[in-house]
Image 1 (cartoon, helix red, strand yellow):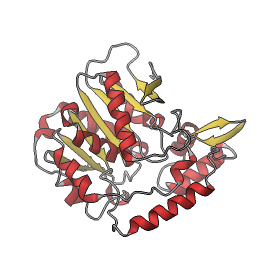
Image 2 (cartoon, rainbow, N blue to C red):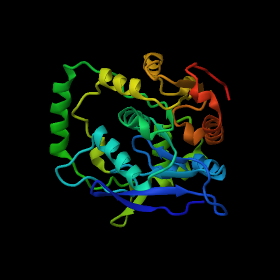
Image 3 (cartoon, rainbow, N blue to C red):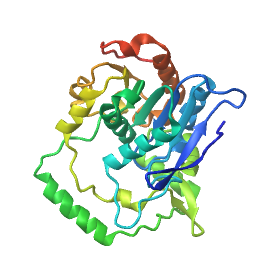
Length: 300
């Protein structure tokens, strides 16, 4: 179902955009932009993107900078949340969608929330999948983070990390995501690796594995959440998800938020429960429920 996928120049780097459109019809609904999480790729949204596209939406899933087929930053560069937000803004300048639904998972959810708070007039629907930011940290931890970052950079080798085979890649994913069915992990392993200098390697810049030097500023992040004006769907993955202890407090900062829980989906809900997730997103896009300030938990 992918058509029109390819590289787009944004902010001086090439971003690879996975585009999902019905083969027999022109999109008639929203432009849906899907933002992936850490060490993930736009390609692994396929199981969610395809039913959204079949419903008439133009669905795009970029590989964020330094992931998948997108460019890594050059020498002397690094990866900060504002860089990702700037890339989304630049990409939307090119796409110029009439109506935008912004969906983000994990790290991608935080990026989506930051963008929706900074540019609320550009987002018609927002969906955040267990992506309300990182745990807050003590300002005093900034010194240690900076020291660790400097040590990491000193020893950094940016050669893509090799993995012996697709089976080994699947096994590593299984250790990281033990609740995801193996057949799903096998297909994800092929989407998250690529050949580099004749060796199968993970498709991300190893710089992503260094310690970020700047602590997560929770109070500032909450200010972004309060500026969001779009109807917002927050999706959690049940008791096996990645839930922050102050999740409810953060969610309450969003003026027009709706909370839906997918039991047993876990954090990687776009892999484990793609049909249920896509169905819930379609209901949200089509119904007036997102315009309510009422919080809700559903089991389906």
